[in-house]
Image 1 (cartoon, rainbow, N blue to C red):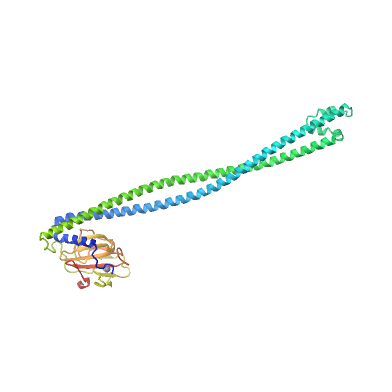
Image 2: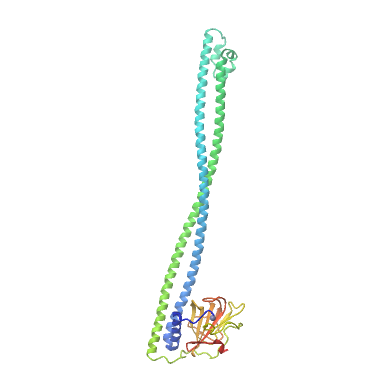
Length: 395
Ligand SMILES: [Zn+2]
C-alpha cells in the first residue's frame, strides 16, 4: 500500500548492485560489497553515536536552561534584598541626622541652663551684698544644680522666676535626652536589620556564584558535545560520499561489462535458491493490500500483535542490501541466484547484513512501521528477471 511503483535513483542504484552480483566475478563483487557493507555498518554506528551525543546535548541544554532560570530567581531575590537594604540605609541616615540635631539641641539647652544658672548666681551675690541671706556662702559653693536645688529653700522665695526657668530648661533637656535614647534604640534595631539583610544578600550572592560556576561548566560540556556531534556529522558526510563513489564505480563497471557482451550469465552468482518460496511472515496471513492494487509492488501482511515479530527469508540466497531506505524504511533485499529476488520492508529492526548468505526460513528482520508506512506490517515483493510479480502466485 505504501510502496507504489516509482523510479527513485535509490532503486536504480540497488538494481545496479543486484546486477553486479549477477554479472561480476566473485572477487569484484566481494571487494565492492564488503567495502560497502563495512561503510554502511560504520555509517549506522556513527548514526547511533550521533544520536547519543545529540541526546546528551538535549539534556545539557535543559540543564543550562534550568540553571539559568534558577539564577534569574536568585537574582530577583537579591534585587529585593538590595532594595530593602537601600531603604534601611536611608532610614539609618535619617536617624543619624536626627541624633545630630538632638545632640546639638541638648548642647544648646545645656548652654542655656548654664547661662541662667550664672545669672541666678549673680542675683544671689547681689542679694548677699545687701546682707539679706546669711547662708548664701554655702549656696554659692554649690557644686551643681541639684546640690544647689537641695539647698535653695531660701532661694525659691528669692529667685522663683529664675528657678522656674531653670526647671523648665532641665525638663526640656531630659525630654530631649529621652527622645535621643529612643532614637538610638531604633537605630540599633535598624542596624540589626541591616546586618540580617547583608547576611541574606551575601548568602544569595553565594548561591548565584555557585550556580554560575555550574553553568559555565555545563556550557563547556555543551561546547564539547557540539564539537563532537559536528565531527561525527563530517565523518558521516565523508562516508556518504565514499559510498556514493563505490556505487558509481560498480555501475560503471557493470556498463563496461555489458558493452563487452558479458551479460548473459543470469543466475551465475553462485547462490541458488530452492526455487520454492515459503511464507515470510510466520503466524500471520492477513493481507491488507494485494499486489497490483493501485500499482502496489508487493503484498502487505498485517494483524494484531505483529509488531516485532520475526520475518524469515522466503528462500535461500545472498543479501544484496540490508539497511535504511526512505520509502522501505529498514529493509532487506535477497538475491536467490536463480533470477529471483525478494524484498522485505518497513522493519523495526534488521536481522542480517549486506553481503550475508541466508538460508530459507532464516530470520532476516522484525516487523515494524519504518519508512513510508502507516502501521506495523510486512511489505513483501517477489521480483523475477528484474520485474515485480504477484507474491501470492508462489504459495
Ligand atoms: Zn506495501
